[in-house]
Length: 119
Length: 108
Image 1 (spheres, helix red, strand yellow):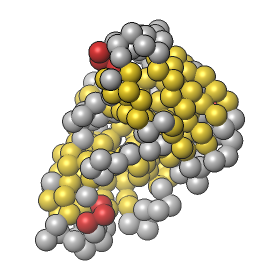
Image 2 (cartoon, chains in turn red, orange):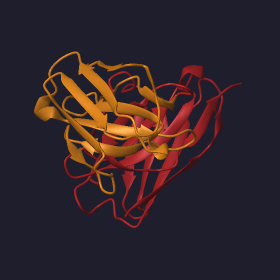
Image 3 (spheres, chains in turn blue, purple):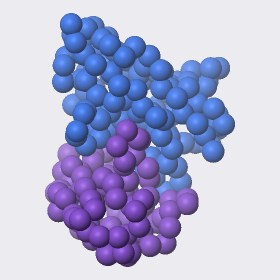
C-alpha cells in the first residue's frame, strides 16, 4: 500500500508563502487514476479539504482558498506539492496529503505536518 | 457548499455498548458519496466507511453505516477499547468536499 510523507517548513511568517511537499512511496502518482489531495486541520477543529489533483495536473480547489492555492504534481520525483500564498494565523494547522481510492473517500493519509504561522 | 452536521457532539459509553452517530447534510449528497473517518489524538484520520455503507480495508464488521440523501448513520455494534476516538463524516458528492464537525466517542 502507498506511503505518504509530508515535508516542508513548519514555521511561516504572516504574508509569506507556505510550501509543502508530499512524497509518495509504494505507489506511482501517474498510475491507477487516483486523485491526490491536501487537507488541513486547525488544532482542535475538523479537517478542511484544500484541493485535489491528478498526475496530469487536472484538479480542483476549495473556493475558500482558490485564490491563494497552487498544487502541482512531479511525476519524476513522485511528489505532490502545495503552495499557499499570503498566509495569516488562520492558516495554522496540521497539513495532510491523502490519496483517493475506489469508491471515493481518502483511503491513504500521510502522518501530517504542523505548520504554524507566526512572526 | 454542503454543510454536514454531526450529532451528538460527544457520546459517553462503556465498552460493549452500541454507538450510533448521525450525520445530516444541508442538501442531498449525490450518489450518497459519504465517508466516515476515525481519528485518534496525534494521528491522521483513518477511513472506515466510503460510499455511505462500504467498509474500508481492515475495518471490523462491528462497524457499519447506512443512509441516503441527507441522513447518514455510523453504528458500532459493540464498542471495543480501540473504538474510542473522534469520528468525522465527509461528503464528496459535490465540490467543495466538506467534513462534519465530528462526534467524540469517549469512555463513560
